[in-house]
Image (cartoon, rainbow, N blue to C red; front, side):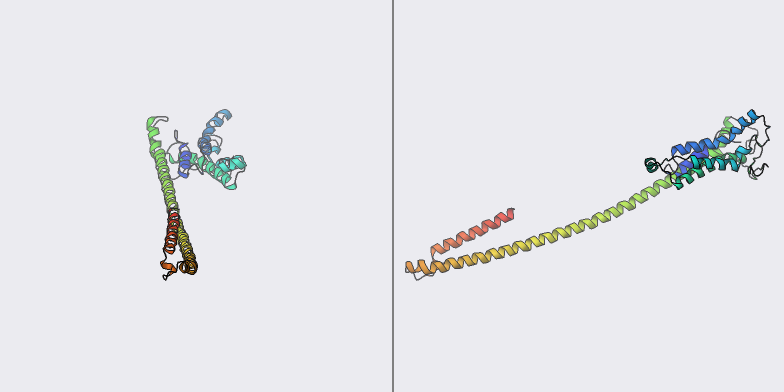
Length: 280
């Protein structure tokens, strides 16, 4: 029989699956259920049953029926351990199934380990349907000639139970980290691609806005040029009818100094307005 590491399968299974599925509280409950079948020593002592009785060692507490009973109790008495379930105080059917399955496996690990060790009597696996005791055909863990609760016994259990469970848990943890890293990498790639698309769209929109502003400014400059030309024509026409006749000058109004000054002033005003727009 295993002496030191009956609780190890519960911790190893919880570490393999991950705390998102198996909470620390459920892991402790599974570890307790993995050790609980040895309560038959207390039952045997209090009830005065012989060692090989069904209520003795490796009797009903080491059976599949006893494990199923504990699983049913776990289903009925399961409490919410997920954050969402704690907020709503509701427990999903999947959570109850996880709790019951975990308790069932942890409890069955006890008689399984006992039967893998070539020491002790066989187990009443099929109680209450059958009280007959059955041993597994393969019992590789040899403790012949060793005393219980010794370092030699502890080393045998570490070699056959502790180290394999530790290796499986480490591989599962590494696998979960790699899967999480790959998922984050895919998410970052999609986010970068989306950001690149948005940047291209923003640049295109900015170019369209600048193009529209440029076209609007060009139209405004063309309209101002037309207005300036009309004003110059009006000034030339009015000056040609008055000033040229008054001074009896044979030259046209366009050559008159006053007309030239007006044209220069208007040109300077237009240039100043263009500079002001450029600064804005």
